[in-house]
Image: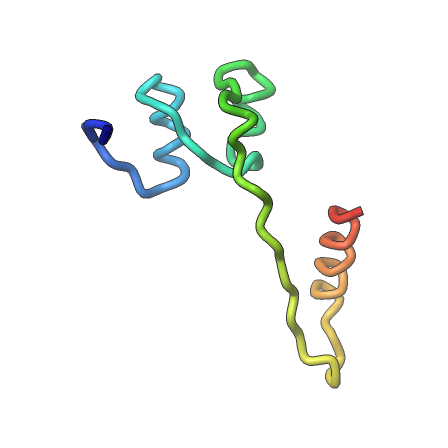
Length: 82
């Protein structure tokens, strides 16, 4: 069975707005809808069907001086993994 498509959105903010208007289900990263989830204006459904997290790689030239912002990003990513 193919769902009938009435409209299409290809922008994260547009998807949030569509969900807030009750136009359907959306699949978005949590950081895009944290405020709406906390406020109760959106609720998470189909939790058992969440996609698996994607791996993230950080590549940089190890033979050069790394900028502080890069080192801070690396530390933040490592902290999230713990």
